[in-house]
Length: 118
Image 1 (cartoon, rainbow, N blue to C red):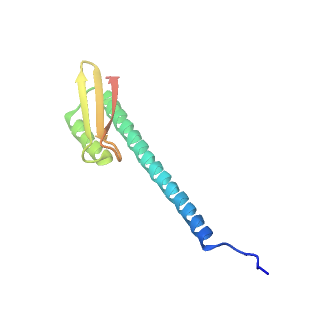
Image 2 (image 1 turned 30 degrees about the vertical axis):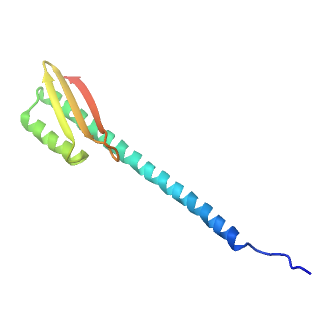
């Protein structure tokens, strides 16, 4: 008389472990992408905040002051990284604020451009 097999075989356990490992690896990859997207959104928000702050400070002063510009450029580098660049062009009564920084996890540079009147 043959005994009925009870429980899992070693092969079934190994297959279950492989499937579980693949699921965990995929989950870790999604988590990494979510962190990169969050960091990118934070940098975008910080850049807009800095550019808008420069426009508002220039409007409040009625002109673009050299000391305020150099201080603002230092803030851009401190907030967005040492390779970030902030530029302000004043033409007539228009002020154009450009900020560019290296993209997170890519070779592409990110940037924003805000324009406003003084």
